[in-house]
Amino acid sequence: MAARKTEGGAAPFVPAAERLDTLRKAAASCEGCDLYKQATQTVFGEGPPRARVMLVGEQPGDQEDRQGAPFVGPAGEVLNRALAEAGLARDDVYLTNAVKHFKWEPRGKRRIHQKPRLSEMRACRPWLEAEIRAVQPAVIVCLGSTAAQSLMGPQFRITKSRGQVLESAWAPALVATFHPSAVLRAETPEARDETYQSLTSDLAVAAGAAKSLKADG
Image (tube, rainbow, N blue to C red; front, side, top):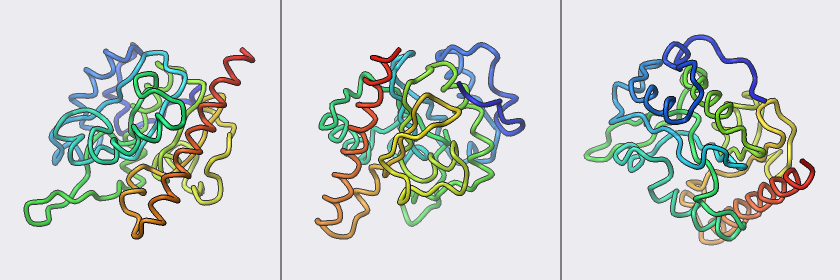
């Protein structure tokens, strides 16, 4: 089960009722850190209330910020394809981010993604904790280092521990892998293919862990 709620940051905005619809409505007015000032809107998680697998990314991107839903941009297209190949249906998993507002800086007419600071991750973590308590997933998949470090600590390294079924305080099993945006950022076709295959195989590990835990429980 989830660890004790972090104090400060978003905590005063998180309602006591741990229903996803209640949490989502409350999150829309969160001002737990300054990121809300530049964002179009809060991007809360989506998926079945009792999904066995929860996927946690870093933060919303440009399209997510505009549309108000997680993983609807180019990285979401990569993730949809990888989920299908790993034997997981997108409609069966809960998708969210460690940080609920888009952090960016202007570059001409474009809005360029900026990595959240540790303080911003900590400020937003009460929302993620509340989502975990509400969904009670069997397996959490951390997509990228920001998500993994948000739950497993700043010392966690994707390159060292990706694809492993890990014990955690957050769920019976946790698997870390690359964020799907890493596929898009790869510099060569070979690197893109390698990163995508790693993402897909790690998602398959998570799918297998979810099935194993269901059989055991």
